Length: 319
Image 1 (cartoon, rainbow, N blue to C red):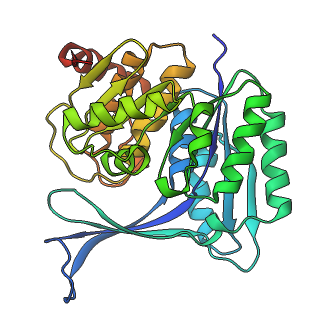
Image 2: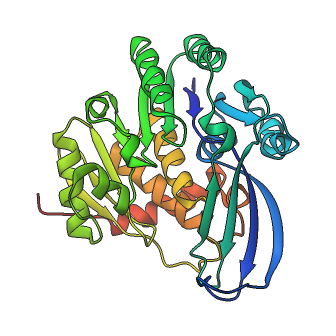
Image 3: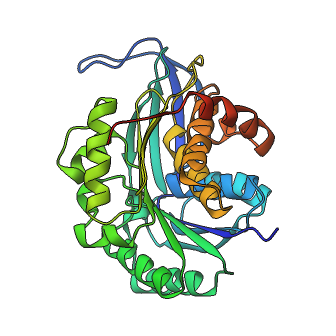
């Protein structure tokens, strides 16, 4: 079977992560432990997953001319991710995420975008060329942790080549309404769903309403990622809640990226949206059981062992 190329456009970060014994307060210094350095960023994580699942994987983004870039590249090179779409921002730092993980695993992140937001004409031209030269069939998975103008151009180039677009709408204020009909699928969390739709999305029922509103504005498939690791899926035919499995949460870092990446991979392999959403939920559920993002991502065998259990518990919601 010919597997689609997965093009991942967006943030590339060096993650610096520690465990803390209590959530951070406003006026205190906390002692931390288990300091680790990981590769991170939404696009990097998607590219990692695509290669891990046997797809040609192309990463597009920006890094700085510092030593941190290699931290982000090492695990991607090991899996054979193509880095020809990554360019270097001179005199800029690579993007950095500083991550605090309390005992409940619900991480606190401070993100310094750095090179992710610094795109010159040469970088934009390199991005365009990478998409134009990508082998078809292909899917473009992107986030908005890079400038909105870069995303818009990437979508236009992808559309011209018949490449489907799946979006993780981080920073929803950067997502222009007129772009929504260009997206095959979008995977907001509840806050992002509210920011995009104007409707609260904290509960299952509210998430369903917000998802329907986004479909009415032109997106074919909407998957609202719930805080517990499940999701609400809206398609032309149905509304579905796919609950998360009960797991011991160690670290939620990168779980949302696992969802979006595996959801897109499943769609690219021809799975129906309901099964693709189950891939996303299963991957996110696995990711939270391990410290760090990419170290917790499943392989195909681990994922497929979980998917049937997710589908068994799925329920159709009233439209």
